[in-house]
Image (cartoon, rainbow over all chains, first blue to last red; front, side):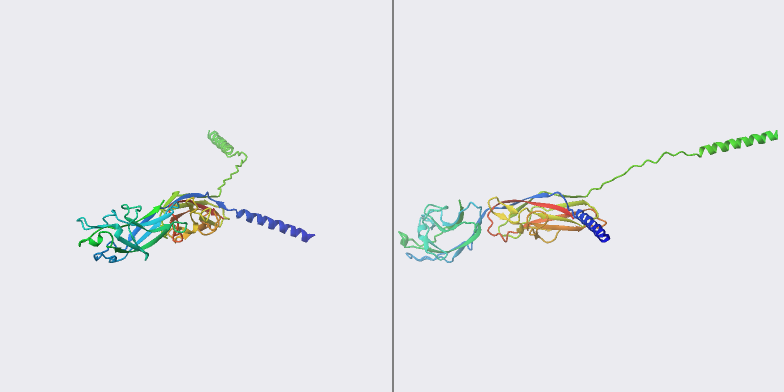
Length: 188
Length: 184
């Protein structure tokens, strides 16, 4: 009888101790303070060249007049989700006078060839996003997916002037100069 | 004549004695009690020096610092039973701490805070507030006898690490970082 009473008292004391402990463990929180975060990743598309000059030692009437050096075009981009493609283009401003001696003798863009990344050598005869009509060549077209919205590519260009077409075998001796442009475009 | 004078002096002395005796009798009212009760409630408040941070991101870069640091000032008055005062930073969701709203997200694992000049640390822990694996305990102050009422500052610098997200598309990413304190 006495033992039962003592056990009851002990249980009551334990319960009270537990209740006090629970009350002590009540956490007190401050108000939640927000910080608005705004991070902008701007769109970018850059193209750099490994060099900016190529020389040709021409042989009259020859199909093979390679450039003195290859040039690598490196295109890098960070694009918005709506973009679907990146194109890399080579072009002249004018089809008929890609290179000229300034005295009315010209080498047309159709006689200027680029081999991109070891591919077939192709004349600049297409109308592309930049430059003159029929004076360009699309070297690359990269489809943009979720995996390459930020990426880069390289185009190694080897050059050649073909002097066999039309009146070019009769091209007079002279120094012919011109400017080839390389440019990239993300669409749409 | 001399006898008369002596009698007069004695009478004056007797009267003075009577008057003095009458003045020494104090009279007190009953004592009335006023019960006093002063309650110093427990409190924890946290305020911020600013509520917005901007980031100019560079694709793939591990270093994209926030435009400003923010100071969290925590002030408390606590009962003796409280053991610690902790300050937390957290997002509601670890997968999308910041988002462009088009399914492209910056997770809390790539959001970093340097507190009071310490190392930059990502928000990858589960803390009392916010989403799982989306938090960071900025500080823990042990409450002892001399700081049951106290205050502390946490100066937070922010960074977004895009090295693990090299293909993140160009966009504006928005999110809400929350700072909150808890005494326990």
